[in-house]
Amino acid sequence: MLCTDRIVVLSHTRFSDSSIIVQALSRQHGRISLMVYGFGGKSRSKMGAFHPMSLLDVVYSYKSERDVQKLTEYKPAPNLVNCTSDIRKSTLLMFMAEVVSKSIREEAEDDAQFEFIDTSVQILEQMQAGLQFFHLAFMVKLSRILGFFPSIDSGHQFFDLEQGHSTAVRPVHRHYVSSEVFGRIAYFADCQYNNLCDVQMSRQERDFMLETVIQWYQFRIPTMKEVNSYEILHEVFSGC
Image (spheres, rainbow, N blue to C red):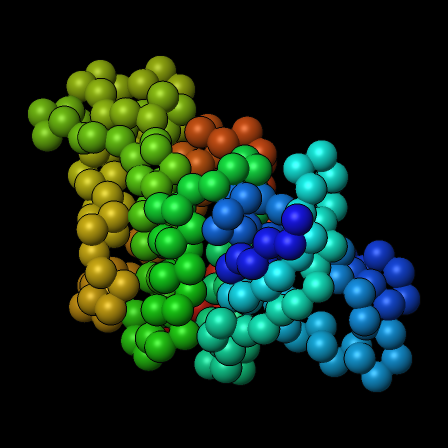
């Protein structure tokens, strides 16, 4: 069956001299693997269409019993010119792709999930300020889409990262922060991306909060053992 779909590219690997396998999130089928041919010789330059978090309108041959589907047509939708030419944005895309790849494993349609990620990438393409907070906001917002964003009791003093909820009693382990700190993290769930330029936070505070969110994810998602792109992201935004 030929399927016309929209995908978000997560990664790709070389399969042969003329083909690659693309790991992607699709609107219709969730996580999907696609075989793409035509990358031999002078065609290698086409690889740029499959950078992390590329948005592509595609056509592929789909069979549910097959592990890898065959992609036959693709085109940018839209072409992420700013995201690929700006080192800050391209690094953010790399980080986002790793987070999504390790957070979403289901091979099932989820419109809200796909729409959030697609829209986030398109907003990043247009953003000019507040980029140093984008990855933090993206992860907090994504946690709500994935279903583990917590409610915080204002009467509780601590937030237990292992259990994923606020508590009135200090946890016996060391994986916790104050409810005040997690409340500042939770602010990003409702903050519009375009308002990130108004956030007042030092680099040290931002780094601590992102490390806290990553740790919180690791307790909720077994495949999130480490985020390899974090160090690159930290280096790129070290002066912000």
